[in-house]
Every structure is written in structure tokens, then in C-alpha cells.
Image 1: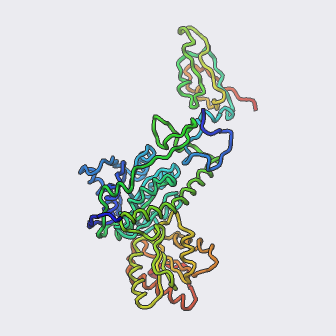
Image 2: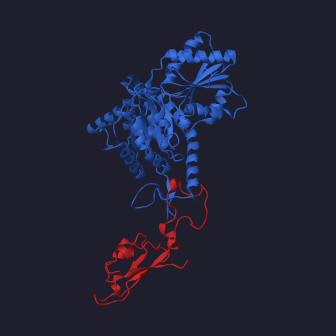
Image 3: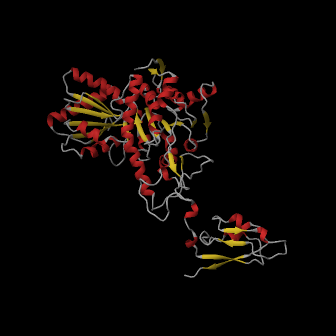
Length: 106
Length: 407
């Protein structure tokens, strides 16, 4: 449930005073800002969650319980492409270089 | 019915401190600066002596003082601070934020000239610097009015149709440090008049109407990034609130007069001897007191002179000013501030307003008293006599004058 519809255009009489946020931050898609995208390699991933904790947009969806033990290579990361703006923090912070940044097509 | 009151010998600063205490303010944060210091000093005594439950937050700068009261006001508290001159200028950034976030903070300003050269005396350029920041600005004439207006200020700022911060100006030293008889309401009458701070309801991001305050039970986001798509609409809302303030300032002035027996014109303007006046002076703050004495002397000499004191500079009462001034042939505007490269701020405002009138009075600007240069009755008399001469000859001479400046 959201306040006002972020897709509509409102006048000064409709919006709350003092610019109190009338829609949640998730109502605004930052995905289209992306010029490059992180590609995740489950074989290198050690399930540490650094990417999840550093992502400024909560775009990393981390499900650590998907792996049974330390040897399990099941993918534990999904990316919310509506939110990921391609900043590359996940790739920068990953201790095992499990992410590579790939240019989006022009 | 006018209530029983107690007369105390107070200077303007002390009078303001008593009013803030009686308004049962929740949070005070301030940093000392002459000539405002006594306000906060007196208030900290009240806190120390247990006379008030107020949370008093001493800070390391005015920037922090304003930030602190912003945070407290955002959490729903009634807040108060005070400053002047360079301190006020250090608050500048946060003053705009207070107004944009619609935080009804009350701030007393003991008007003082901004440096350089460094000076501690009366001048209105400090608050004029924040003319466009979105704060309501009321200029008071004497310690009694400083007390009365501080009480009124909480009611005005917190009114649900306004929700804007407000500055109450008292002239540095002339009012801030001058002892006068001040009639004070009882604590009970004062706090009942001001009432409790009412929090408006606002639409939050879940589509729910919640109190407009920071509350973990009903979270809202204040001060978000607003770019090209909505900034203009938010500014229009502030303009509407200022228009509402014109009406509310008058109403609060009226309501207060029924309680206290004291009234300041219609709350926006105070008008004396205007009906048959050939020349008048328009001014603000303590100078009006001196001008009133001179006006009476000149009236006794048979000169048709009048006086208009502007109490509310923001919002500026455009239509009231126009209706009041348009039948006066010659008007002298006294400005205790100067906009370098232009004129005095009050003059600019009045001349702009008078363009809407079909009549075209002669308007002359007299910048005076900068940096606390003394403004005795003789100075006012010179101005009145100059205006009478203009009326007689029809020759206005120089539109812009710096009264008493040595060549």
C-alpha cells in the first residue's frame, strides 16, 4: 500500500505540507539508471553476505540457507533489477571477486 | 474581560525569557551572543532553579542551536531559541530548513548590526538577511511588546493553517537592555492563552493520516530530496501559509487584547494620526516610540503629521499598507537596514506595494541608525520637517538618504 500514486502528477493542494514523503522509496525504480550490471558467480561465492550488507539500494537478495554446508555451491544471491543502479559496490567489496561488472547494451 | 496582571521591572531580554517560560516550552537550545545573551542566561536560571521543566540544550554554535530545535520541533516539541547578528547568520542554512520542513520554532532576535566592522549595537540587517527564508518576522517596539509578542508567537507559528517558524525582533540594547515596567500575565493565564501544541495530521507513504512528527509508531520521512518535479509546489505551500498568517496574526492580536488589555494596531500595522496627515513616517521597532513623541509635539504646533509602524514585516501586509498610505501626499520611510546597491528593505517593499495604487504619493527613504547610531527626537524632527518642506514645495529631492552620515 502506498500514499499518493508516484506515476501521477499532483498539485500543491494535494501533496502533504513540508514535502513529507507520500510514497515509499521502493515506489521509485532506480534500475533504469544502470549503465553496467553485476554478474554473480555462485562457484566463487562463499556466502559471506558482504554484498548484501553494502548494497545501498537493498537490491541484493541474499538467501544463505539455500546452502547446506561450506562445500555447497548453490546460488544464494538474486538481484532486484528494478532497484540495482549498477554502482558496483558489491563487486568492489566481494572478498572472492564473485561479481564482474558488465556493460549494459547502449 | 481583562485579567489581573503583575507589573515587573524588566529589560526586553528578560521579558522575552519570562514569556518563553510561561509558554511552557519543551526544548530550548541556544548559544550566547550580545545583545541576546540575557534571554538565554535568564532562561537557564529558570531551568537551574527548577521553575520550568524545559530541556535546556547548551551547544557549541548557533548552527547547532538551530539544528537542535529543528530536531525537537520535528519530534513534536514546542521549541524556542534566540540569537542576533553573526550568530543568526551562522544559523542561516538551518533557518531555511526549519521553514521548508514547516517547523513552528519561535526565535527571539535582539537586533544587532552584522560585522564587519564588528559592532554590537542595534541594526535590522541581521534579520533582513533572513527576510526570504520563510520565517514570519514581527518587529516589537518596547519590552512590553516583546513579552506580549513572544507569547503570541507560539500561537501564531503553531496554528494549523500556518506551521511556520517565527522571529520576534527587539532592538538591541534600546529594548533588549532597557528597563521598563512590564505587565505580565499570571503563569496560568499565559499558558492557557498559548495552549498546547497541536500536531497536524499528514498523509504518510502508506496512505495513512498520521501526526506530522517523528514517531517510531507512525514513521514518516521529513526533508526528502525534492527535485524539479515538486520543489515549486512545496514553495507555493509556504506562500499560502504566509498568506494565512496575515489573518491569524490579526486574530491572535485581537484575542490577546481581550485577555491583557493590550493591542498593537491590527497586529500587522499600528497607525497614528493618519486621516488628515500631509506627511507621515513609516518605520519599525523602537524608533516608532521616539517618532510618536515627536509627532505629538508637531501636532501641537499645528503640523499635520502622522505615523505608521510596521509590526509584521513577513508576511508583509501589502493591501493594508496600500489602503493606509495612498491618501497621504508625502511619505518618509525609515530603514534601520540597507541593501547595498539598492535601498532600505522596508522602502523597497513599500514602494513596490504603492505601484498598485492609482495615487502616487511621494516616497523618500531615510536609512538611519545603522550600527546603533543614536536616533534622538531631533533626528526624527529633521525628517518630519524635511517631509513637510517637500509637501510645501512639491520637490522631493533625493529619494535615498542616509540620515546623519558625515561627509
